[in-house]
Image 1 (cartoon, rainbow, N blue to C red):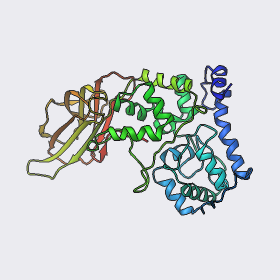
Image 2 (cartoon, rainbow, N blue to C red):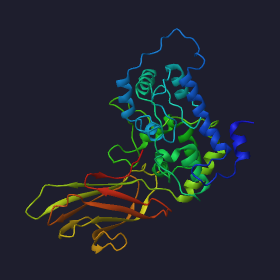
Image 3 (cartoon, rainbow, N blue to C red):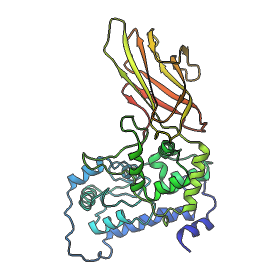
Image 4 (cartoon, rainbow, N blue to C red):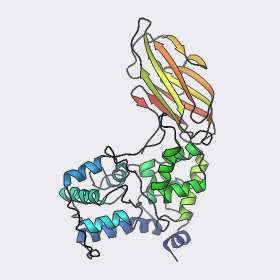
Length: 381
């Protein structure tokens, strides 16, 4: 019996307490810790090869850690101090054992292949962690759950750790599914062959449209993946299917993005442009229906003029209690559709903000995109 079937038979329910885990969860928690203790102790020497191990550079490792490895930092802490994932700082990691774990993790972590993290970068990371002082107490998790969270959400956030990067409601993969109207087979491919599947999907998206999901990360030219490839032995398919069914129940997220930019001040006032787009794959991704765009109008400002179809005027937003808002309504935004609106105000609005919402397809969480003058849109890690 493999670890997947053993887990599924023994553990139907995850303990609702955030700090008390069932046997299965302990398997996923302890396995990486045991191996990392072996790393720290030196362990048995790796198989001998004729290729010399690269010499690690702590400064290079610090740069790699800072540039684009958001998935690693989200679990192991900004300085390797540990959080959801084990402590890395001050562990005196050997290159070979650290490389073995990065390439073939024994716990919840996905595997990072050479194209996403080179041997030299692994050596630099080990040198960087070894240059840091030991940690007395790991840091806090990025996300924790309250008691009574759904079983699948507990799996995602507190057992496997997906939610430590993608948020408690897995917004990023739900947006990714919305980009191509993905199904269960899409999700499996994206998790188990992520370094292939994600690049395939990037290739289908219109590069001229602001993306709703993260793009390649890292220093110029590297374009690394934030996530590696999960093994079905470490993340069994029945467990993954339960997470997918919970995501499906929350509802698909249309990959809408929004951006506010300021134009030059004129004699007629101060004009701001709002661009809203559906970043999905044309003729494939999800369309948004009954789209509402709102902008928070400063209390001391008057709306002098607007452009863009569907303008409904200024009204007080009693629900949010944020004061008056200018409102536009758009019947439908299909994949790659874009709409542009302008608003001219009597005064400068340095912190102009707003939202984009849709009515259909209906979702139970996250059907609002926050937009702001400084950027905005949806993305996450």
